[in-house]
Image 1: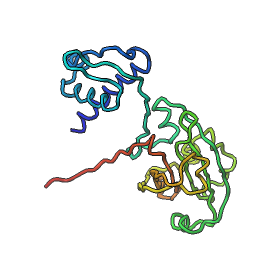
Image 2 (image 1 turned 135 degrees about the horizontal axis):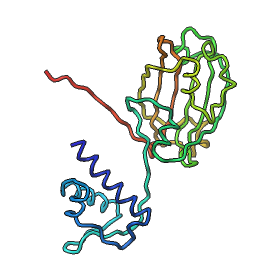
Image 3 (image 1 turned 90 degrees about the vertical axis):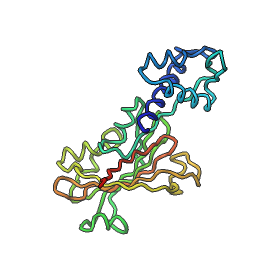
Image 4 (image 1 turned 30 degrees about the horizontal axis):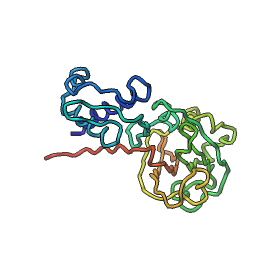
Length: 243
């Protein structure tokens, strides 16, 4: 079932892209279900499902005996898929989706290791707090509060956290996180970040908590990452043992 859903969504994206690129114009008649089925090597039910969803979005209209016609140019919104088993920086994920990635460094400072941060770094006296905003095509997408231990990353203040990846910095110092634990919550953005993210005060966001450990099992990263759900999807993999 999941595979069929993925195929019809891929066909929808392909048709949308052709409309946006001008290969298919408003008022044009789309190929028949039979033609698309043969061209893409998929069954007609999958094609019909894609056309049905495009019609629900108001992009096309189907007329019995006449075919399916384009009504408007769609607005394509790609989404960053989080929760994958592979780990890479957020900026890299955005670029892999074919979108422009940029960052704003809101602040970076050395702070006492207290409160919930102390729970993650019980042996640390101080940590670096790095607050950054990630942008997609110059629009705020995610805000990240990252805490790394001063005892391991002594020269972090010299690193360019705007243009370079935190994980590249960790890799250079041989403290790249080889194990990453993450949890997902749904919550509102803290009030002090609303203007930065251009968000409404009561809008819910995906909030990911990341805990990274290096090859020697040292805790090297604790991040709270707030993501705009408009541009975010979540991949959840479950392994079930059937007896």
